[in-house]
Length: 349
Image (tube, rainbow, N blue to C red; front, top):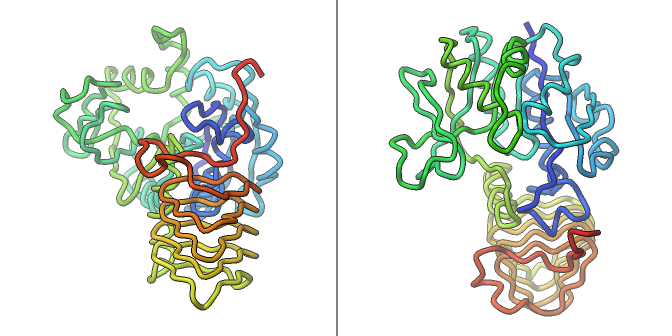
């Protein structure tokens, strides 16, 4: 039986601001493509082609970008989440899409290697587990959910454990396979202290009722792309896998023979690079420019961005069509990367 998929992509991406003032988080570019395209394309390549996106904040941009999904090999439909009531409430909006079918559930901002989806569907096809939950290895799962695994199956999950208290390195990776009875379990699940209906609480209910939840480990990178620095970091990991050299150059890019490129680097179409030092970990998207004598590392240039003066920049995202003439003070020292040329606004707007 083929799997469907539901992707929850309605959130506001608060930690990703200011990039999410003008776009929903799933459209933040990573390695030259929006996050959501990596996810939809990976699922489609694994044979999961009927996909429903639950959208909300600036969701019309997602629908306009992806359309019916044919470009990515998928068949897309959409459900709107008008008011946020938790991940469980979002999932219930796709009940008619799920019907009586088993389905993949994922968040619209979590990046994993594409072969993760193929491994997941293979395990599902061969073992027919009642449910599946992906885990990734972290130093301490205090920011997410600690997952305790015994003999390949989930024993228990501890949401947001206090730092240093977990005796497992497994984190809930935000990728699942469920049977449609999860929806009925959700309806019987109490609301969280915040008054929201959450999928992890329903998984707890399943475990308490003896449902065996198969764990499978994500191999390679994993990111919830929480902040601009996360987008830069995971971009480098993806680009490094795209070619043996770690350097990917579009044939329509124009690069000075004296430019120095340090992997991982991705250069998009119509990019112009002068006698500059570019990399490691730089993505220059379509139509961006880097002038002579500039030095860039750990930078994403969104389409049409320009490094117009010979600045040294280490750790930044440059907004679409922004023109950079000087490096921001302390850009290399701040914990979070600056977004240069971003449109700022107050929460009241």
